[in-house]
Length: 152
Image (cartoon, rainbow, N blue to C red):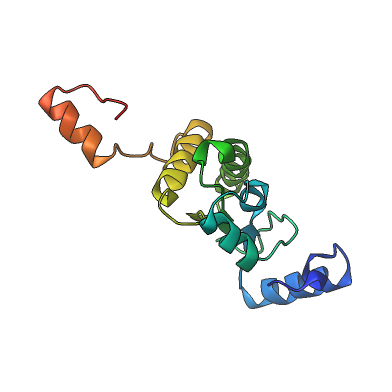
């Protein structure tokens, strides 16, 4: 949903949330705060900022399966505070017995796996029943060979 009436904290938003909830359909919480906080000094960022809607932040759960679509910065660390906020929200939802889903990407999707991994790490810290993220294959291979990871 992208129309401003669905983000008005008034009749429009309440009506659509009531309708979706009554049908057992979840609202997609579309979080573009990281994307729009990013510096537009890269073609991928400028293109994504031009295409993605700038909608109001919501953390709405209408069903047992809340859904978040997160679009962040190219620099994953710049999104750490936003992801920590979502990890807190997910821990609360999980404690309520919900099964939330998190879809993460960034302007060129090159670092999307790192976004997901950081989110899982932050969620695991708050909610230990969620497994810690597995090591990257290269980390496992080097550890098995006894090699130290390098910077380059």
